[in-house]
Amino acid sequence: MNSIRRRLLGWLICGFAAASVVAGIGIFHTAREEAGELFDYELHAVALSMPANVATAREVEQSGPGFDEIADDRILIAIWDRDGKLIYHSQETPTLPRQATGFRTIEHDEVHWRVFGLAQPERFVQVAQPISVRDTLALHLALHTLWPLALLVPVAIVLVLFVVTRGLAPVRGLSTLLAARSVHALEPLRLDGSVPVELRPLVEALNDLLDRLNAASQAQRTFIADAAHELRSPLAALKLQWQAALHDGTLSGEPRTLERMQTRLNRTIRLVQQLLTLAREDAQASAPSAIVSLRRLGEQAIGDFSLLAEEKGIDLGLESRPPVTPEDICNVSADPHGLNTLLNNLLDNAIRHTPSGGKIDLVLTRAQDTFGFEVVDNGPGIPEADLERVLDRFFRGDHAQGTGSGLGLSIVARIAQRQGLTFKLRNNPGGRGLTAAVSGLQRRTGEGGNAEITPAAKRNTRATSDSA
Image (cartoon, rainbow, N blue to C red; front, side, top):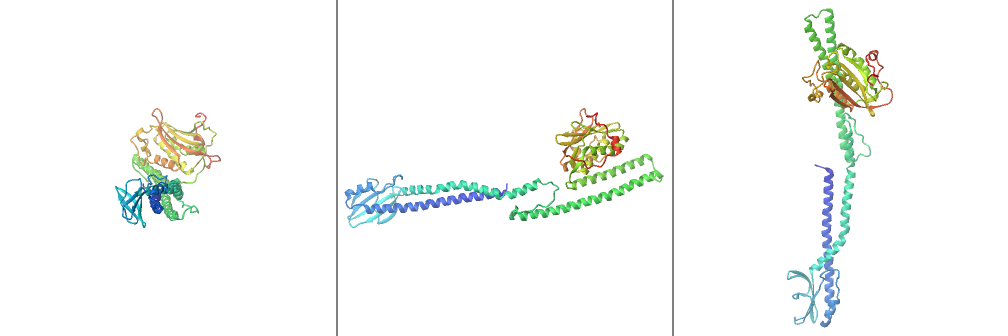
């Protein structure tokens, strides 16, 4: 995964680690040079401090300067007379060959030595020491110098993590803000003082994109509204002309053929209405919620579909399921138009697929602080294999009866999704009938915004006391 955070942390931590390694190597070499100068001074001091009397040289060697805390810090001393004869050498072995005057580094028996030769009038003094002693002291000094740096590395890593996390916090905040937005929220993002300068071009580009999307969405909604008017009017006029021609006798033909033509005309009108409703739901942004009385909305829907139910001899009524009582107004927060469209489509679908003499109940339900409703019929139901597919647009299974276009349940599912509701279909126990359940309507207090109940709604609302 290509991550800015990982890239920043990787470069910063690796860069700091590399800088620490380079600093450690530099400190070691500096300590080694300082240790070399210190030991060179020691060799020079030992050579000058050797007494003229060779007999007392061993006492000087044993009491000479040393470093007790450093292992193997032996110093080899050798003295030659004027004739080049070795007249003294220290007890340490081996004896190194005589070298020239001054400092030099030699290798003897695979061991590197630092040698200092001092020419005096009567003799030549040579003092030597292994290079390993110098390296040991250099490492010792380097470790004493580097331990604060070793403590600083984890502290610096934690600091880098903290700084990078804080630095990328505005990016995460912007991502969270965009993720929490509704798919229909096209308002521009607010630019305040908390937005870093580096993110302002991105936010401005997003706002420009949102403005263009909002304009395109508004143009689509305007087109749908215009199309609804332009399509409904000719179809309604055509139906009125059809009915007028039938009444005055100017339209003649076989009654069965005329009936089929009228059925197809009604189906075309309904199909256009459903297509426009579905298109409007697809293009519509989230509508503002209002307090709606679910009971009043149900009573009004029962009144609107009473005549259609009576034509098929269907018993249509409103009931309540405890803890909902007949006195509950069932105020909820919802989009009134969308909720009314959803309920009407469920009732219309139930009436169309319920055989004559059937029964349809609109049942108000409640679960804790949410209300819902169920449309229960005793029709043929839906095969279990098609319960999910019937929500697809234009899907009509082999079980479907009556007229229809396969859009009613798709419209219901789309409205439920837009309003954040749960919509489920299930067959009734015993294999007779279908239950369409809608839940998740938030309970609210206050008067609903519906119009008063019409007399037709009151006449066709079944008493709820028996069902409770």
